[in-house]
Image (cartoon, rainbow, N blue to C red; front, side, top):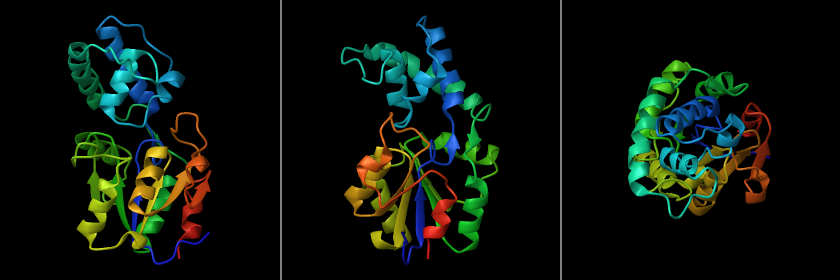
Length: 225
C-alpha cells in the first residue's frame, strides 16, 4: 500500500502514540476509592479507554463498558473533577511511547510532513504529556476532545484540520488505533491507517476497513511517497 501526495498526517494520541492506560487506571481507581466505590484492574480499565475523560469516568462509575443508563448525574459531576485533578498531577508516571513512535515521527517531520494530533482527550492535558515524553515541537496543531463542538467519530475535527491547513482530504492521512478514528476518517472521506496494538475494545481494527493495518508504527513510513 502506498499513500500518494500526502501533506498532513493526523494522529490519535492514546493507544496510537502513547500507552496511557496505566496512569488512567491509577486516576480512575483513585476517583473510585475517594467516593467509596470498588476499584478495577488495569486490564479492565484499559478496555474502557478511547472516548475521552467523561466517558471513561462514566464507565468507571458503571463498572462496565456499557454506561449505566440510570447513572446518577450528581455522582458523575462529583467524580469527574476528582479524576481530572488526580490525572493532571500524574500524567506521565507510567505512560510511555509505543515502540518506534518517537523516531518515526521525527523522520516524518524531517521528510516535510505536517503532523497534527486529533484526540478525544481534554485539550489541556495533551501539551504536558507531549513535553513529558519529549514530543513537543513535532506537532503543528493539537485538537482535543473539547476543542470543537464535536469529536471523533464525527468527521468535524478532521475536516477542521483540512480547512485550517488549506488542503483537501486526499492530501491528509488519519492514523489511529480505534474504530472512532477510522469511522471519523470514513465520514470525512479521508484515507486511514489502523494500528493493532492500542485500545479498540477488543475488536479487530481491520473490521472497520482502514486502507492499511499495521502492528508496528514504523511501518507507516514505508507507505508514504
